[in-house]
Image: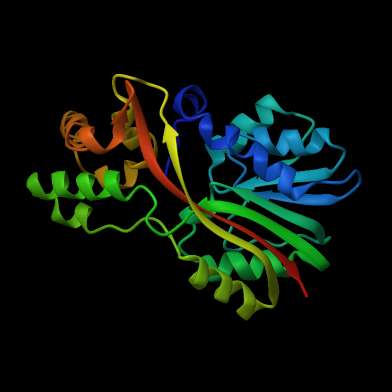
Length: 251
């Protein structure tokens, strides 16, 4: 999927803003080799580097990596698939915020992370969990069906696992899971007028392939109208996020 990096930075900065608490959980130490998987435009990668770690960022999106390199030229970034990556030298830790739900080949991602860590190395991850953005997606699929786009409505572009499901996959590969949480995190959107429309434009592009721009805008407006009572509170739009947070160690 192509990413609008300007829209991402202007109206969806919460993606990396919420990641700051994950950095605290990572607790990077000076001199540690750390990999940021799904680094986006590099904000959190840079924050980790400021703490003295030797950090690298990878993302599948060439647009995101290009922007990250422009903003943080002293941090190494490269375009790689989170489901299939390899580095010559192993890492002390792997960090990932708001990215792994885009990786449908989650088993490949787990294998890549495991093989890229030193013995005793850790992963610190947060991404969409079971039930994430259910209200938005249900309404979007309803509106797509009403517009006779049944094929688009049948798409499942994300991997939103339960804690039990994901912990079991990690343990199967050889990780020891030391923390696993699923929690609700209603997330305030930037635009008071069209927060849900912007969210769909940013993250729901895959549903609109082959649909003309005018219809895309109309469908997004209908979705926003349809979720008003659930997601508009105190004059603000909220996305109904549910997040999984996991820490595990390579044994």
